[in-house]
Amino acid sequence: MIESVKKLRADIIAKKSSVPRNPGYYIWWFIEEDKDRLLNIFNGFVKNPAAKVTTIDLRHQTLDGKEYYALYFGIATKDLRDRLKWHLGSPKHILSSIKSGFISTLRSTIASLLSQKPVSLQVEEKAVDDILDSCYWEWHQSNTPKVEEQKELSRKDYIYPLNIADNKGFEVKKGYSTSMVLRPLRTQNRLWHIS
Image 1 (cartoon, rainbow, N blue to C red):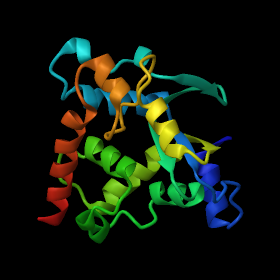
Image 2: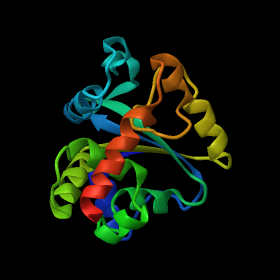
Image 3: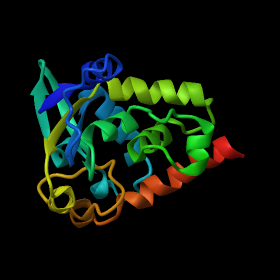
Image 4: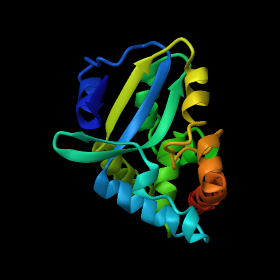
């Protein structure tokens, strides 16, 4: 299944979500403008021009007449609906969640890419929500989500630049780990908020 995040968020609020409470895996599809914005920032930290992420490295598809790109792959070992809620900001994008590290990896990564200087948590949360709300979320039920993750993140025909852990296909194709770019940015962003 695939659905707009705006609709999924509204359905969750209305307590009529179609996302199952089963394990599975999912893909975040970003609209072209947001893909360009995030990758321009990401690529600004990549020294080797040949190692920069380009559109040709990514899966894409047309949804509602617009181009979308797969930038993040994730798994839910227990409950896809709870995982979606977590990414959408439950718990909220607040200081205690940032301090404890209990915030979605995707939210933290997007916030870190967007915030190249200290900003308030409210500004940061809105910026992340705006990007996520323009996405599509594709999900699949699976009793073996970790196996699916290992397969997907090991592919060499396309990559997921916003994934940090176990992103083997990215490392093979680009010659470096996404964590080399993303972890320092996430640490810097976290320190701005807790200091």
